[in-house]
Image (cartoon, rainbow, N blue to C red; front, top):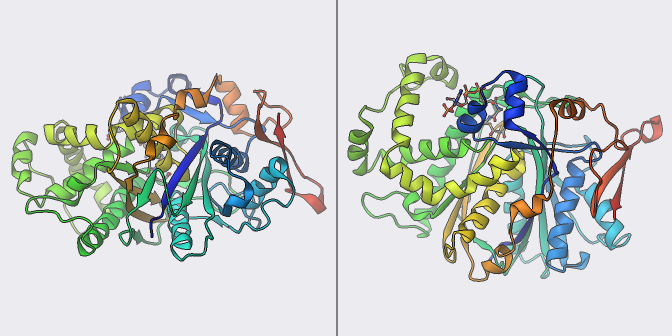
Length: 464
Ligand code: CAA
C-alpha cells in the first residue's frame, strides 16, 4: 500500500536575532556564524509562545490549506524535545487549541501521543504512523504528525549560536500527493550516549559540541549502511559496478542543527561511499593528499578528537575534498537547496530535517526543476543517540502542495530583536501578557497556573 506525506505546513515565530548583531555582542567573528556554521538569522519565540502553540499553529495551517475537518484526522502525534510536562503529552495541548477553532470534543476520536528521542523522534513518529496506515487501521483518515521545538542553549555557551524555533505539521495518508515512502528500507542505528541531553527540570541542554558532531556523522553513516543493504535486498536500488547507493538518491535531506552541518554530513557520507569505488583514485589526485588516518583507527570518539594532528589533517582533507568538481556537483544538485531555509530560521531540533525537506521542495520548484519521480533520502539524527535513514519518491501531483510554498511570505514581517530584547526573552523575564508582537490568527499562550492545585496548567487562546 502507498503511504506518504500528502502535504506539510511550516510555522515559524516572527521574532529573530541577526547573526551579525549576535556575533558583535558575544565578541565572535560574524564570519564564523555566516560562513563557518551557515547562520544568518535565528527565529526566537515571543513571550506568549511555547512549543505547543507552534505545533497547533502548524496543524491549523495544514488543515485549513487542505480544507480538512477534525473527522478527517485519525491520529495526531507531536514529536518534540521541548516537553512542557513530565506526564501530560503535548498533543493534548494541541488538541485543546484546535478544538477552540473546530469545536469542543471535535477531536475526541483522534488518538496520539508525544514522542521523544531528541531530534530524531519526528522520523520515528512518521514511520509508526505510516505503519498505522499500512496496517489498514486508518479508515481513510489522515495521520497528522507535527514536529515542534524551541532550540535554546545557555547564554554564552558554544551552542547559543545554533538556536531557533518552529514547527512543521505533516499530513500522512494512503494516497499522498507529495511523497510516497519507499517500503521496507527504513534503517536505524542506536547507542546509549551523552552527546547532548537535558536532565529533568533543566531548560537548556548539556552539550559536548564536537563529540555530538562526530557522533551524528557516525550514527547517520551506520544507518545509511543498513539502508544500502535493505535497498539492494529489496531491489529498490541496484547499483552497478563502480556505483554507490547515493548515485540513485536525487536529493538528500539531513538533520540540520545549523545549515552547514548538511555540508559536513554530505562530505562525510560521500567520502564513505566513494572510497570503495574506482572514482576515488581520481578524487585523491584532485585533493592532492592521502586521506588521513587517526593514530588509533579503532579508538573512541574522544581519542580521535584528542588526536589533534589527525583532526587538523582531516579538516584540511575535507576542505580540499569539498572543492573537487565531483563533490561540488553532488552538493549543488542534491543538498544545496535544503540548506537555504535553515540559514534564515536556525535550529528547529525535531523539525530541522523537515524544514530542509520543505526548503528543497520550494527552492527546486522555484528553479523550475521537475521533481516528479525524484527520490529523496532523509538522514535523521537525534542525540542520546539514534539515526534513521529512509527515502521516498515525489508524486505526480506534488505541484498542488508545492506551488504556493514561499518561506519569505510565510515568515511575514519579522521583527529583529535587539540583544537586550533577546536576552530578556531568553532569561524568561517577560510574561505571556508582555509579548513584543501583536498575534494575529494564531494560537497564543495566555498564562501558566501557579497555585498548588493548578501549577503548570497552561491556558491558550486563538488571537483573531
Ligand atoms: N570565519 C569562518 N569560519 C570560521 C571562523 C571564522 N572566523 N571561525 C570558525 N569557523 C568555522 C570552523 O572552521 C568550523 O567549520 P568546520 O566545521 O567546517 O570545520 C565552524 O566555523 C565551527 O567552528 P568550531 O567548530 O570551532 O565552533 P565551536 O567549537 O564553537 O562549535 C558547535 C560548533 C559544536 C556546532 C557548537 O555550536 C555546538 O556545541 N552546538 C550545539 C550542538 C550541536 O549542534 N551539535 C550538532 C550535532 S548533534 C545534533 O545535531 C543534535 C542537535 O540538534 C543538537
